[in-house]
Structures are given as C-alpha cells and as structure tokens.
Length: 450
Ligand code: ATP
Image (cartoon, rainbow, N blue to C red; front, top):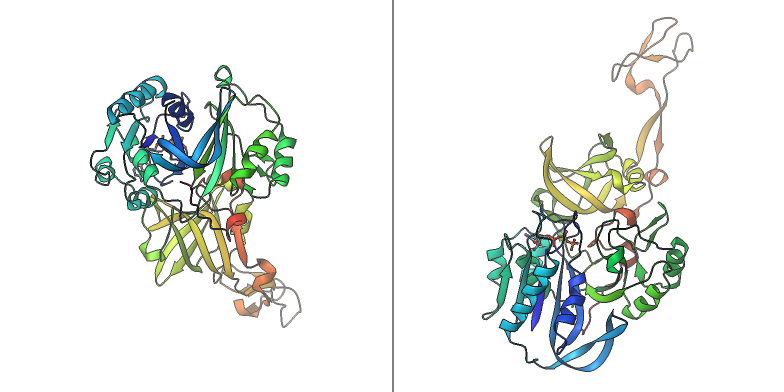
C-alpha cells in the first residue's frame, strides 16, 4: 500500500511533515518500506503554503531484493527494499486508524493554515496528478478524481493536505530525482537554537562532490539548517544516496536523534514550464526567453526589476532583496540583451505587466551599448558644454552657443565587457527547493528504486 501525508505542520507552532515518515515506519512495525520514503515538493506558487510546499509518502508491504538504509530511529537502522514481494497483512481500515492517530498526535490543528490530510492507495495514481500539482493550483476534488478505486483518504479541517498526499504518491522518479537525508533533534531541544559547527559544514561540502546547496560561500550562510522551531536539525541534499550518511556523520554539533533518507524531486526544476512570455499566468513557474526592454530599476524593499519582451508581450523580471548579490548581475542587464529566465509568477500586476520572480537567468547575447563619455566641446570657444536638460542638447556657459544631443562624445561598450554570456543563479541562501542548481544543470538522474 502507498501512504501519502501532508499539511500537518505550522510555521508558528512547529513540527514538520517529514518527521511523520519515521513515525509512520514506527506505526507499521510489521511492514517493510519499499524503496525510499519520498519528500516531494509541489507548486511553490500556491498562496497557502507555509514554507516549501513539501509532501511525504511511502510504500509499505513485504519487501525483497537489495536492502539499503533509509532511516535511523532509536539507534536502530531501518532498511528500504528494492522490490515488493507481496502485500502486508494490514487492512486499509487498520491503516486509516493508525494514520488518524498520528495526525491526532502530531497535527498542528491550532494553526488556521494547517489542514492535514492523508491518502492510502493500493496503486499509484497516474503521474499526471503530480504534474498538475507542481504546475497549477488544483482542488481537493481534482486530486481525488485521480485516485484509484478503493483508495482511502481523510481530510482534517478543509482537508487540503489530501492534494499533496496524493500528488506525492503519483510522482514518478524516472524523469529526474535527488535525495535528502534529514536529521532531527531530540524533542527536548525543539524550539531552541541549533548547534551546528560551520567549519564541519564547509568540510562536508568539499568532501562530498555530489551533494548540493550545503553552504552559501558568498553570504557565509549554513544552508542545511532551517531557522524555524521545527524538529529538523539539518538536511543534506545530493545526487548520490551513498554519500549522504557519511556526509551527515561529518557534521559536528548537537546530537542527531534520528534521521530519514528521502528520495525527492528537489533541485530538479520540475515546477518549471516552458512558455513564451505571452502565455505566462499567475501561480505557475516558467522558463521563458526574450529581449531586455528597460534599464533595471531599484524599487522599494531593495528589489531590482527589469522588463523583457517577446513578440509584443512584456513582463517584469525581479531579483528580490533576499537574492543578495544576484541583484548585481540583474542590474547589469541593458535593453537589447537576449536572455532566458526561470522563475515563478505571482498575481501582482505592475504597469499592466506580470512579474517573474527570478530563480536563474542565462544571458544568451549581450548587446553592444553606446554610452556618452563626455559632453561636446564648444566649436567657438573650445569649452566643455553643459547639458540643458534630458534630451534637450547642450549650451556653452561662456558664449551661449548650442549643440545637439548627438554631438556629445560617445563610445561603444561591447556586450561582453559589461556582462559575460552564460548562466547566473540566485544564491543558495535564497534558492527554492525545486530550483535546479547550476551544479546539476547537466545531470538528469532516473532510478529504478521507487
Ligand atoms: P513544508 O513545510 O512541508 O515544506 P509547507 O508547510 O509549505 O510545506 P504544506 O503545509 O504542505 O506546505 O501546505 C501546502 C498545502 O497546499 C497542502 O495542503 C497541500 O496539499 C496543498 N497543495 C500542494 N500543492 C497544491 C496545488 N498544486 N494546488 C493546491 N494546493 C496544493
């Protein structure tokens, strides 16, 4: 059977849905886990997500074939199995009761934004459900319409967690996948400051080449550890699951109470749709291309925005304040540059245009720019002339002689002197869970293990 669970946590009162993967393993001691537990990220533009729109699922049954470590709980390693040999003897009804007890115990019901749900199915729902849930905003009814007959589901409060629960089961790792090992803190430490040795994070980052988003060198920020009051101590992401247990052991600091090794769609760009600017819509994320059509502007809050156009359609691209140094790159863009961009679109409209919240850009062609380097010299007295006003030409302060705008001294700045062509990404400290890091741009992993 497949179990999906979502929306049990709260940004205010704590918890983390990923913690429940281990709790589910403990609640079904007579069953094996087939493959790895899944940590699946869904549409990052849904307005009601608490943080990263993550949902968790796992397959339970009687396993066979290769065994691999997937969790450490109470000092004991739990193994996942390569294949399912047969179903376990836990009925759907019994499973429903055990999961209800877990939500009663762990669900942060006091937070109005927490709307838990779980789903139990005997087969995976069609993959199309996952793609809709990562690209669009869908309803609980939409999600339910994909569930195989005989599935059991339960929603608490508005029941929205059913969407993530079922989409997580529907995800297919054949397109691409990564892993994340998440270590949890002892319950008595939840809500207190975390103790992680920064030097050990940097050493780990250098020692394990297939991990990613560990440490933000530009901003001196430990990216494996959250700031929220949740039970997570740290999470290390990577392409090679065999690296992740030694990578976690290399982190010094407070004791790791337990850990779970998830398979995931983090760092895959699966939220991104290819589209032309004229087709982009709010609440989805896109890869699109066009020509820069304005000079970058700094707006309130320290964000940088720049306009781009394609076939008569225009959109703003924004590098928000948390993207720090990435804003400097975006500030170098000039009208005429050819760019590709990746990012999410909210429903905010500025000057009639939607805004793409930039995750990364590729400068395909940098335009040569003609820039003024000096005002004209007066042809009568040889003095440097003064500007009369924007676009109004020049006047000599000695003899009053006039000159046009185009009589100033100009030079051509070659595009590549200003900005190199190639990829640029938001720093790790501001990276979305789903954004594919440039480090992985040439990697696309599929896997036989579910
Ligand atoms: P996490 O803290 O685990 O990273 P989160 O707290 O940001 O994630 P959730 O608590 O899971 O997010 O809340 C997101 C809610 O949105 C869940 O109820 C989920 O089922 C729902 N949801 C997920 N994807 C969609 C979608 N495409 N359309 C509508 N609702 C969605």
